[in-house]
Amino acid sequence: MVVPDSKEEMFHPPLDLQQDAHVPDFATYLELYKKSIDNPEAFWKEVAAEFYWKKPAIGPVLQYNFDVTKGNIFVKCLEGAKTNMCYNVLDRHVTDGNLGDKVAFYW
Image (cartoon, rainbow, N blue to C red; front, side, top):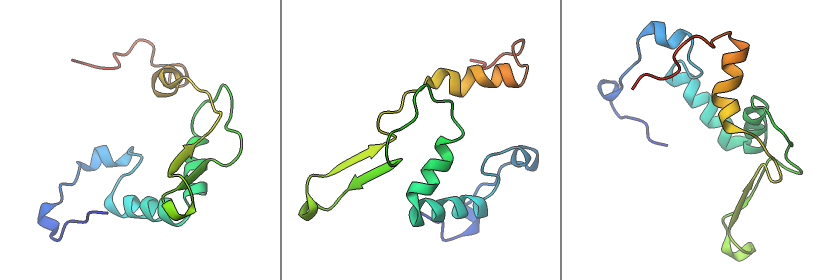
C-alpha cells in the first residue's frame, strides 16, 4: 500500500462530494484496505452481496495460490457466478432511484 509521507501530497475531495461517497475519507479507505487483507473472503463476500446475480458463486468467494511450492499459481474469484454488469452499474440505479429521465454520462 502506498501512503504519502506528507499530508501536502494528499488531495481531499470537496466536503459535499464526501458526504455521499462510498469511501468518504482516507481513514475509511484504510479500514477497508485492512479488512481486505486480514479477511479477503469476508471482504469480497460483502462486496459481492451488493450486486445482482443471475447465478450466485459456487464454493468460496475467493481462492488463490501464489506459492509455487504448493502447486500452480492461480486466482479464482466468484467461480460459477453469472451477472450482468451493465444492469449492476447502471440499470438498477435508474430503476431504484427513478433516474430514467436524467443523463447518465456527459461527454
